Figure 1 (spheres, rainbow, N blue to C red):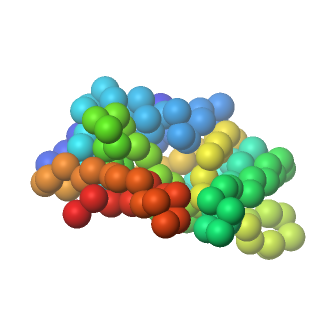
Figure 2 (figure 1 turned 45 degrees about the vertical axis):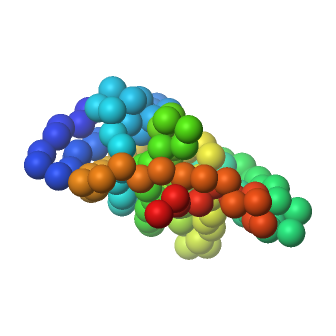
Length: 139
């Protein structure tokens, strides 16, 4: 993993063998980020995504293994109870051009992952929404 800071953003490249969630959490901690928005593309060979069932307040999770193009990875950086909070969604396609996606929990990079964290000027915090069970923006 390599990254560089520029005014208002951090440019990130993950390499073969890197894992997306742990790599971004390391950047967030190392740079003490308080808020931002992420966009990225790349290639992966293991992806685990979920779908949140609001009524049950739980995630359904599915793991995919193979060759995948990361069509889009978008999300945000915030804080919950003072700790870094990373929220990403990913869509990815296979060799038959099927597309899958959902709430990202794990992604192992097979080629590269190129992304940008656009930084916010203010801290973004989260709170638990009791009606849905989700950790939502505290505005």
